[in-house]
Image 1 (spheres, one colour):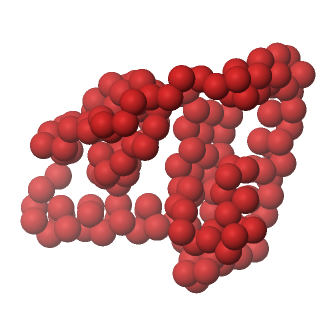
Image 2: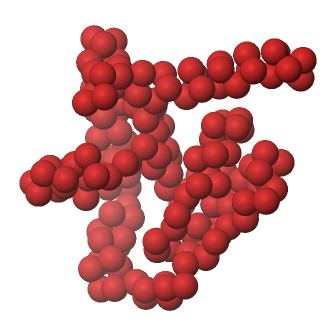
Length: 162
């Protein structure tokens, strides 16, 4: 999230889509529908191949929607954990840091609920909404997900498929 915030300094905030954050504690996605399957199957991993492999293995249900789309490993080798990464993990792997994380997550969740309730819009004119939990956060600007799933259901009904 800090990286996304730093993109504002360079004026490139609209070049990066940060619509789905998932931590390693909860790789299995809760929503199992065609929309989420598309998001999962179109990921282009740049780093963290072991975690990405775990993500795809934890969500094999998406293969029922798109069996032809298989996980593509990057040809780039995984970088080893650097000193800064190991130090940050050590600093933030304790009860105090977890409490701080919970507090910041609550602030973020409350803030985004207020934005959605007020009907605040993003640059595309869609109402901003962020769905948050301890282990995941994802964007649902203007309830786009629901619109797409609704159109999909309508099309299935028109075709007589359930």
